[in-house]
Length: 433
Image (cartoon, rainbow, N blue to C red; front, side, top):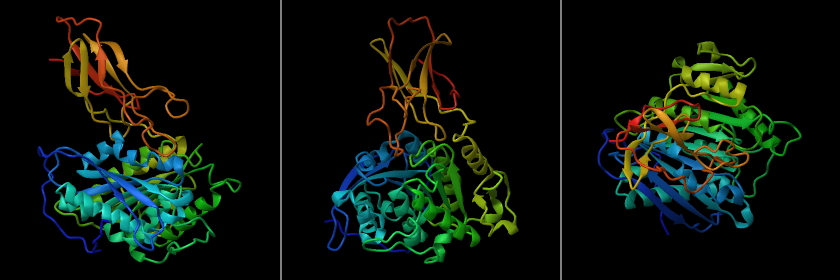
């Protein structure tokens, strides 16, 4: 049994953000419950990027309730777009597989029923096996869906000193009026420090309708956001059009949210968190869907959402109007482009904002082939190289190979490759040498 040691005081470390040759990798651990804890068992998978000297923080993506969400929960750590976000900020990426007796996820949604202890125990374990002691001490960026959103929001009230930001999709502290069998969720005013944690709540417009299954869950979201904004919290809500309880494209907003908030919250020379300066932000109106620079009078306006930057506010506006966010920057170019036995191969990092749709192979600047993914009804109609499911997990456990077979190699020709992201933007070409 792994024992957890935890202090709410964050130790400060001086460290370098420069890249090194230090390898990363994936690590996994099983945590069993201790006496009095309600969950059945939980596995965690931690991914650390190659080439970083020290881990600056952890992005944890907690799946929702039920077998469907749980069975691929560990793959949250394998998602290439979220890995790109983590690598950009020298973060680790964590996924879980939370088991519950009879799939009763009330056994783990309340952190005090044992799931918080399990989470901290896993981080202690990873700190030891990776020989990176900071892993057990760095702050967290929390993402959660449904039951995972409930867990993430209650964690913001439990450990606000350690949480950089949170993105709960379809959930908050609790569904309205729900009685819990063990620990009760926090009341909205239980911990004023939680109101300093930037949170962007998101839910589908269809699940907010009174006749929908998750109406009381979403009512709990809107009630909490209303309370937080009236009390000056740096919170926002995004209502995803033509969406129900599934994640749809909300990740496009989530990655931009964390990308904007992490550098504002996390000091460059330590793991200490800064309080956000509301005066430097933007606000967006739920009523008329407009954005504007923050003014002092906006601090306690419940109709207004607060955003860390103009770009994030613009992304929120586009998602709430269209259900999508257009990328305006080209993806990174492929690397390690080589030929062996008439087969081209390469490596590529995902675009942080819009991942990888496909690769184009060119001969003398003319496209001769594309490498994408397998078409799947509903979740990957366009046969993209990378896609995700209802729970925002990778659609397949294994991505397509980054290979392209040539019928014949022309030594006099120039072969090149480029990445195309979800907005159709192309990277610069990488030429075969």
